Amino acid sequence: MRVVLAEDSVLLRDGLSRLFASRGCPVVAAVGDADALLRAVDEHRPDLLVADVRMPPGYADEGLRAAIQVRRQWPEVGVLVLSQYVEERYATKLLTGDTSRLGYLLKDRVADVDDFLAAARRIAGGGTVLDPEVVSQLLVRRTAPLDRLTPREHDVLALMAEGRSNAGIAGALVVSDSAVAKHVNSIFAKLGLAQADSDHRRVLAVLRFLGG
Image (cartoon, rainbow, N blue to C red; front, side, top):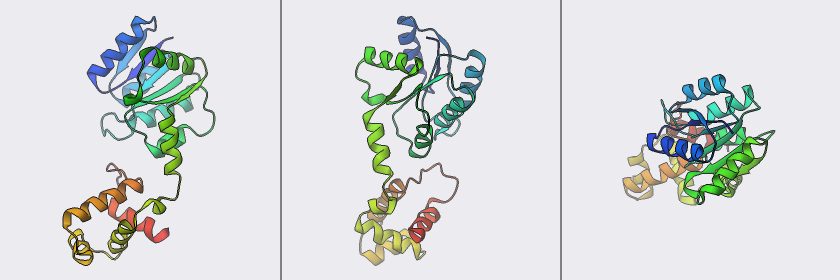
């Protein structure tokens, strides 16, 4: 099994390289960003790509978007997403359609090296390996986003829709500015508005509220 590793953490990249090599799986390329990932897959056509979600330059979802591109351009390459995060938007796209040669595992939940390597080989051989937590989070997030807001978060979002600042919302609800800030951040998270979004998250949240 020939492997391409795409991981921005130098220590983790080196550790995974040594792990695969010690089990007879040569790492033909170990890279640290999404562009290098695509070049390495194009050059080596490995049996397996192991990619993190968040990579340079933006540390948002570059690795996952590159993995989707690999699936589209080189479907014979197995893809294992190995991350600390479940990135909803692109993870759903990755898991739509044919799921052969595909895996999504969470780093913190990999408890056994032999199990991890067996999963990697299964993906390279045409199988599918999904962490149950990934499946659970994606199913939860598919519920209507506004339904996940608490009553207080609904109040905060309604006042945001009126154009009020955090200080204005705090005055209307008779709470502290810090409490409002926590509610606003929770709203952004529940609505799937990542900090890397190019559009203003406050505007996007209001648009979701008005359309929901």
